[in-house]
Length: 252
Length: 339
Image (cartoon, rainbow over all chains, first blue to last red; front, side):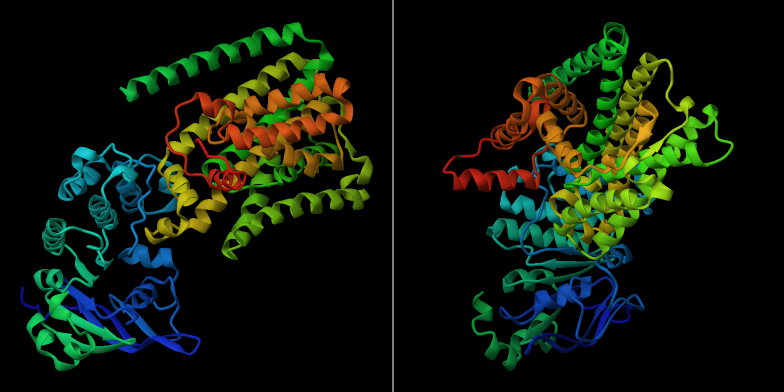
């Protein structure tokens, strides 16, 4: 689980700022995510993690600064274009289509990848194998015909992961993927992430530090919109500033 | 197994539908007088508008109170080309009708693309009302171009002598359009659009250009409405600013809801039921007819929100904002919502 230095930079922010009135939710933040890694972004509530994600995916436009993805400036692009470029987001609150089947939920994401242009959407898209593969990885293949709303909360989180995976994105932004999960489910999620990380890059925000320790290679700690510290798990754990601001981090 | 019950229901429905259609095509024209045939042909063109509205409202969640604005575009296009352009003859009816439909679709696309790009959301409903009103005023004001309040009378050869044949053609057109829409909502595009109805932001995050998709869907509905208008012009041989009627645009929503919101053929049933009832009952009920329709509409929304066909047919999903509104209303009234 060592950090693969020497890999190219996949995503970087340059002096990124997002102001809401007088409040700087993201304050002069510059950081880089390398290809193939699993990066954790942690920080107390209000540190700006979700705002950072929103700016990266285009849901919010920054006040100043840049977001560069694979060498391209994506700062002011629209949400769907950024998604097409290869950034997928899993939101904090599960947003599965409850009335649709599990298969159709993943299928909606998969058909976008299979039918790149809008006009091809009028014709048939063969996605059955892709979707069943992903469902198998998420341990949901038996429930492919279930309405997604009937899944347990943990299963819905896995389904959400399957959906973002189906987009074929190069960068997955996961916002608290283990929220509301039991210990076993968290361990399962951790294994899933490590399995997925072989093909893609993951940035995950979390409050569960044990989960982070198990999964992440590098940790970026945020506080009040800025980068407080960055490094491996051991480095961050010993960092006095981190311990000070994030009291009880070892007990989370 | 729930699956088998669904299949049985679907098969029954198709059989019932085919029987009905065959009856209508073969028997009805023989049994009716020419006046009735002309009138019912008009209702069939209305049904076309309703089918398009049913798709865009029921499946895409986009409410339009201006579909007859596009009906009017189709009608006026046919009227203007046939009466103004030199060299147009009976052989050109089909291309002219298609031109009316295409023009209506184009207008619909441009209008909705601008509106959705501006993130109008619910305001779009007001825009659709305004469009109908705008076109109506334009048609009245521009006497030279659009014939003013007197409308345009088309050349004699426009209305076919074989009205029974025309009636059958209209039923055929309805069948074809409904089938095409059936294929459309099951295509990847159709699935994406239905996802947009439920959670547009989510679908956007998956990489779909939701503004473009919604505009295309709306354009399809207006093209169908335009087709209805063009065929209406062929039936009557005469158009007037009344075709842009807001009253009809609003009625179309009632036809869709009563017939079956969330189904494709429900709107056809709703249109025919309401219009036939109006025809036969308004001589009895006079001005109270409008109260009857209003009460009926409210009753359907509250107690049978999926309409007649919606209650009979198996439904795959129920996530429509109209249902959320309905639940809210029922809560306020102190009643529980049974979906």
